Image (cartoon, rainbow, N blue to C red; front, side, top):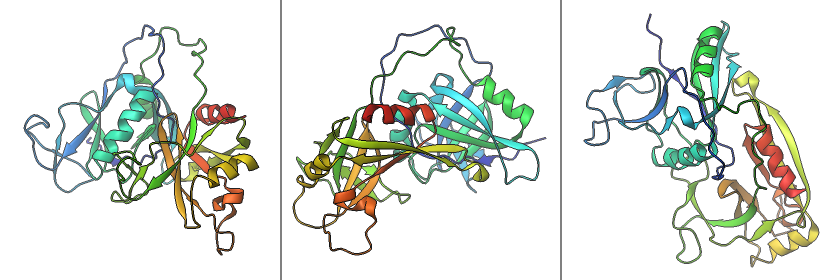
Length: 317
């Protein structure tokens, strides 16, 4: 029986730095997995000549010949019960390695509104059309029976020969605040911007230099909160709210002139985490406390990994 191609839903949100680590012998996965972008028309040198049918588009799609993700890019997998389904069906949460997360973050911005197709052993099991940046994980929502979901989730992982040992310690996270502009400014901003909302045209450009580099000296508290989206089929995620010391708030405020609203991004290990409103005008009404200069407290997330969120908290303690 042919399985209907399901739409994959994914969120952005994990650290995307590259970490140097000693290579360890790795076993071969039981199942070959590939994530491939697709085009509406065949393109010589980029896509296959034969089109495929997908449920996320009413047109033929032409798969790229080279995948964006394969088995070595899978850091871990777990099952999430699809609560919206009347049957006991499951989707598969695929956590990406840090290198793969960075690659996916860049690639997804370039390929917004194009199908991303998941193949297991050469067969299409899911497809999606991203409307926003993807990063540290994707959800394969094939709505599988538990046995099939477990087979795929277990089979696509590449196990290390040293599995069961403690992983090597990761370096302390580097955290920065950077102002952003809605247009590229020569000499002030990075040449390449990033998408700041679900609208693919909403691009902002971070400053080249940080307004504030965060250490324990600048941070009064880094508070981790858990957000359970299981009822929506998205699992549990984590956010870290950063509260600055008064001296750090004053230092940040001194980097901008006037009382106009500004926009700021939090950068963790080179990855941009959202855009935050910043208001210096004390008399302005209807401004949340977290956005006011004297009480500025951005919430960084969502992290799919509690360990990654805790790593950020540890760096700021």
